[in-house]
Length: 251
Image (tube, rainbow, N blue to C red):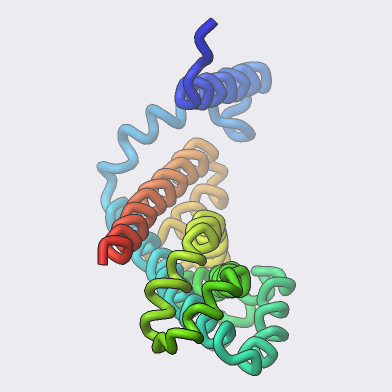
């Protein structure tokens, strides 16, 4: 018997979950508590036409994606510095441990004292992603084959060549793994920051309004939109990262 393809299995799982969701909504029969997937789907066909939809989607997308990219660049650079200079790792260790352990809600509330609500999602996304990128890249650097390092020492390769031809290829799996994990956390924390800070013209504001007016259909519709934006950004980012590595490998 021919084995089912992974895509078909995923599609079947999604359809099963939608059927369970629809069944639960029909049994409960209270849209205010649980909107059905059909009502959410119908709302998605109309919500994008409303004034402010594109502005809200662009507002949140630019800020959360920006926070992620800043964290990726800075986290990678800090990991390189920590990999080359052990003292940097020692100095950064308590900071990264603190960021990882403190609840995101605490950072959001503290950040609201310093920042405007429109800047909040950038900062929180950046803060939550930074230790993930840093720790994974540093782990990749530490896992580099010692024989490769010794060979580089024998031939006296400058750090630039070591970085491009030894370090980057060696940490590739760690970078991809960290990126996929961090992308989801960036969107979760960024939207959470918007819901608490309620910046005007954001997806977080739309979610807050849907909750305030007990509009469960809109709440689910905006959640689907967040998932879609996160998925699109992940696909675009991973493609760019793969292109970057292909260019390096072809040098």
